[in-house]
Image (cartoon, rainbow, N blue to C red; front, side, top):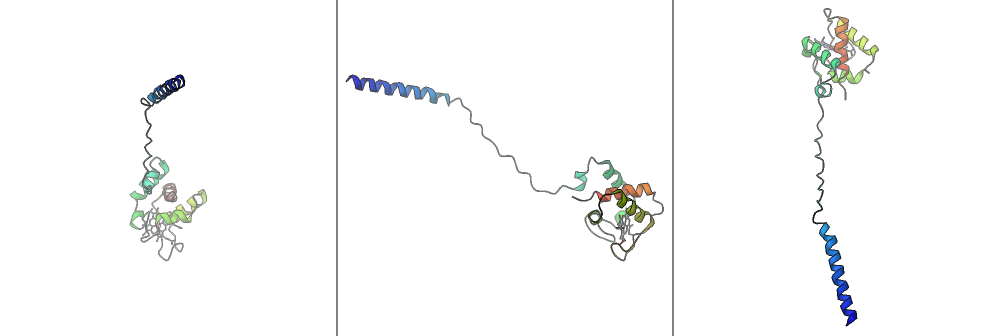
Length: 140
Ligand code: HEC
């Protein structure tokens, strides 16, 4: 009799303890982690890549203001090689910039095929170099 009374009292005490403990979980806020949205694998355009690069912007403006785009495109070969192909062929070094700038001013042929790159006698060496610097940035 006494023993069973003690036992049930203990059970009540335990139940009360468990309840008190469990009560705490009511205020516990579940932190739900939202998975970071996975950005779509879209290739960045060169314009985006170099939007803060003055050498890119200056060279691009010069190229667009000249006759270059009638024979060259960035991504595709037309009369002349694509600028991407030119950038892939030559490392971006002072030496290559000087050589290519000379080809732009004086004209050249035989590197990419039979069609010659016409001379641009009206173009300063300085501007030609800026154009070439822009072209050589066109690689990813
Ligand atoms: C009438 C068409 C034509 C125009 C206009 C033209 N190009 Fe070209 N360009 C070519 C051809 C064709 C080649 C390939 C020449 C070769 O095989 O050596 C070439 C080659 C080049 C090359 C690579 C040279 C090399 O030695 O690998 C560069 C750089 C270049 N052009 C830049 C320019 C720039 C900058 C302009 C504008 C100022 C321009 N081109 C205007 C037709 C043109």
